[in-house]
Image 1 (spheres, rainbow, N blue to C red):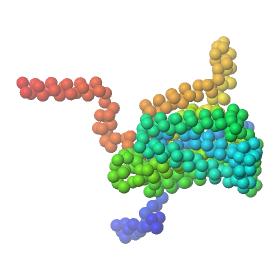
Image 2 (image 1 turned 45 degrees about the horizontal axis):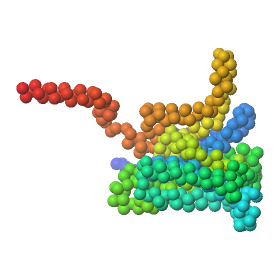
Image 3 (image 1 turned 60 degrees about the vertical axis):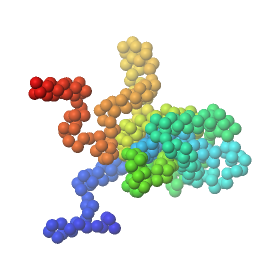
Image 4 (image 1 turned 90 degrees about the vertical axis):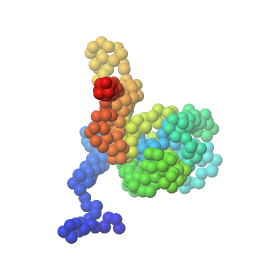
Length: 404
């Protein structure tokens, strides 16, 4: 019982080994305050007339995707550029199982039990994990740029398959409707019940954070960290690289597939254009912006990028057009700020790499790696190459004078 362990002080008194510190109590208070605000936000949105619930649903999906990608990239150090493919697999799996227009449903291959919303979510989770293993198995010996290229190819193949497999997926028509509106006690998750969908995604997100934190502190999580730092050293310590990497791919893909199933069910529509390569870049940008290796940082990064993409860009377009009309600029009067979102994302990443390489909220381990132990080391790292060469020349001149 680690939590009940006690240590003896010099005076012989005992105190809990894991006693709460002022910082931990402050973090708990902040977390509870944020949780209360998030739970009450639908009522705040309705009372103030903000009309943000429709945009918060995809932002919540982005947060789930960022959590899963953080497992692959942040914990295990595996660069995955085809993450949107598992998002598509989860969404189409629910469509195949629950849509009345699905070929499999019309052929009678899907039992009635699996045509319901909740069993379909579980199957989408498992199917995405299986495809994650299929992708990870052939790439176990790859790392860095080569792994990124392979995952990029996988991310391009899957949406194009769904686009061209017209008899199965409907091609450009997509799949609609997806599932019957599910119910959970007094909550009805019909397409118009955005508030209930918001609470469902929030509950799943909180549960996902709990599971990921437990995984990070487990033996598997420590194995991921060891593989990320040095695969050769990890293998020398007895870590099974094959199993460790496959677990990372499977769990990351399962989170993405589960998010895809929620996305398709909430919006009642699946189309190949929803799973393009830009989605993978957007989620990767969220993880980098928030802080690689920190699940809370990944969530915050997804909220920031999703808020600009879904809310801020649209809200800024009107004032910009009005300003363009005032100054007589046709370009500003007709420009849509949403078209510049990737420019803004790219600029944010460039500034982040220059000013704060670890992200806004890096993990403690990564923050320690980026911060030198002593001030002298920091000065040496920030010293220009010209200054170093000039210093070496001065030392050489002094030594030459002493020899003369």
